[in-house]
Image (tube, rainbow, N blue to C red; front, top):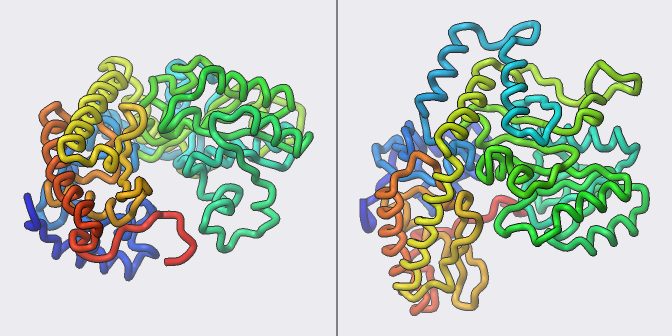
Length: 441
């Protein structure tokens, strides 16, 4: 595919069916067709490895697969073999399966900083359970979350802080306060402002920037000094930073942590993990008030837990984290060189850890631009690259990365033309893409 040859008549038809039956046309806002250039939102038919095919028969190299969850590539053989084995033995029973014990033990061996774990189906359930547990343990109501991290949960305590708070009582939102990443003094000031009120600090231990020296250790010390619980959201950093998560890489153990995304390679599984003395509040072997920690009908489906165990085995035995970093470093270097060659290095900017790359599209004044993002995405799509981010999977080959860089170079050439013209509109092909979190449609 090249130029304007990409045609998606069947995808457009299925998108109309989706909007007729599903609010927003997708079951995840980040997958909505408003995130893609007009009439260029492919509907996927199937995927294998690092490639996907849409219902029109077009083939793409895919990045950010499954919103970062498919880090080994689609239909990974070791994962599928483990899943098939359990499907034939039954997936859900009236009592725990032995697989639940095996999966818990495997997880705790992989993430040795945790002492107990409980599985669920999605990240929101796990992070909300962490907040509920922190409130129960401390007897406090306020939650302090990092304002620089984009998403924690679909539940009210977080969504009420976004530009989409409709339907959430202000009494709930008022109990959530925020702090900036990397600034210990701001967190200390928050504890001073709300003495004996903050139940927990919750944040991603790292995202687009590395934690400043001593920052994570300082957060842990502040939380404990003020009687609060430190929660690491490792949905993204889990496995991509190291098999043991960011906590394993940086050597800082939180009180509680949550995992998901890469844990199941696309199968629905998440985890709440942490210190035994806290986690047992949700169990049966203590004398205090019971905490409704996590209790989900499908949280321990055997095939999903089998997938998680296969993922962990694959990461450890095949050195997947190192491969993700190597592929990401090759991609980042190539994109930067391509942007520089076209004179747009200050406008097409790659950011983040090599295993978790994103890109920024900046206008002539260096401001984030949805219009220039639209132009860039359109050129990637017509070049056969489906990339809302540059988050790699281990299924990519070096040749795939090099091909992606070539397509980026073509996109950067058009980007340069738009900058020179002072207006990207002629290259948009319709309305610009829009941010997920916005107050109005």
